[in-house]
Length: 112
Image 1 (cartoon, one colour):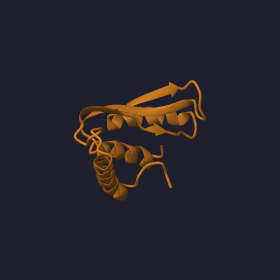
Image 2 (cartoon, rainbow, N blue to C red; image 1 turned 120 degrees about the vertical axis):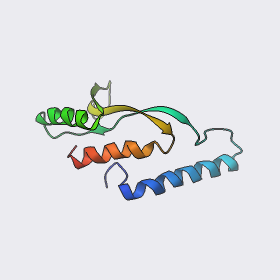
Image 3 (tube, rainbow, N blue to C red; image 1 turned 90 degrees about the vertical axis):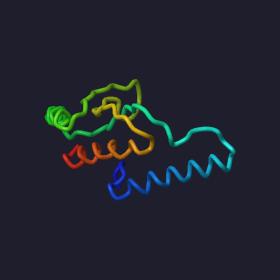
């Protein structure tokens, strides 16, 4: 199984997320995190490429679908150099997961 939810799993995942957070909030009498967080969210989708030639394909496809391509180098980790997207979207959490996943599906379906 891949690292992203399948399209048919996303709505139930969001609903489960909402229900469990609300249940735990009531159970522990917590005034913590709510699901009415609205605003601008920045998201990233990290991809793997097979060879250096795919970098240009990735950059061009990012432009086509309206996300910014980013190349980062981390100070440590298993994969310290990573290609990813960046984009700001507005909305309410966790509903903003839907457009995030739509970009992830597009990237996956294009082979990234």
